[in-house]
Length: 416
Image (cartoon, rainbow, N blue to C red; front, side):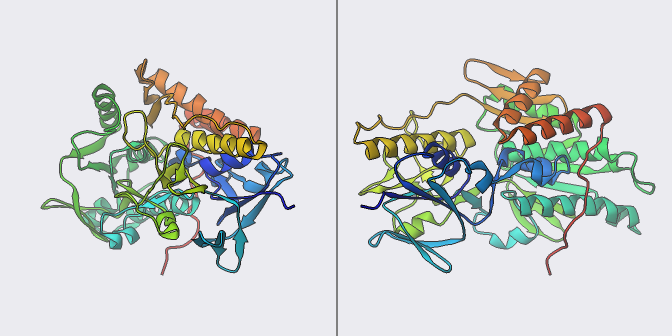
């Protein structure tokens, strides 16, 4: 008899957590991902703003799972799922499964304006981060050689759309880059004249946080000279800048942090999806009517204690991946299944800049330096591998002491 075949699509937080917990199980586990590395997305904005290099927040999937002899890794792009034949389709082959775990994450959502993506890129993968870093650093270089004051002001204008954690962290980091790391590097321009704008359609930044912490985050942004605009959504983005209502803001660099949509998993499965494309799942994270198919992480619409869908956060995906592994181990051993999945919320954090962050642990709410220190320690502990933890910690200490940013490299080229 052949051993059960478990296929995990996606090696993000959820998929990797499931694969790691299934190491040594009495089953053959296959992990499929289009890239050969696991990315620590919460620090991706620091790559985009020249604070860290890509290798410091990513690790090869094969190296992470090398001790799990029953787990193999396949590099490839999934194009569909045949539920009847129980196979996963890739570009050039099919991989059969007895149990399928879909952990395919999310992508950018432009609310019906996909044409904005070319001028307002989002931040989901390393290629996005290095492309945004190139745009930001090139903007300063172009401002240095600009022939007119109008052109110089446009190159020194940066617009971040979306006031969630990614948008707040990006805006704060760009402001710090201009006011601290680059302040002595140019001769014609003063980088501190850069205009950084954060545009939020709602009434406050970090809307998922308590109002007091949102207010603290806004104050920290303003101390960094970030202009925060509320209440009016962006109506247009193009090469010249952004339009907010009837006002046009000339800007050479626009960054999108306003929305996400789930991957194509619902389409692959031929099931209904919610408004952002997530697959509704049951209490055990399986697709209704298909106990052999699990969907987790940003791809899943799983209800929390309040009946609302759980947020697309790394801790949610990691806990769901570990839960699925427990369910599968129980099935393999013929033991009683664990109770329905319940997310344990240990808190939410966001950093705004140097010595400034907000943290909501439910029973404790912090802002300022203490929250910033906790944010740093927690994020370092979540990185995979001692080397990455040590290098990132030393890089942050060096940047804090010297006021320098160590990855200010313009690499690659603009797409044709």
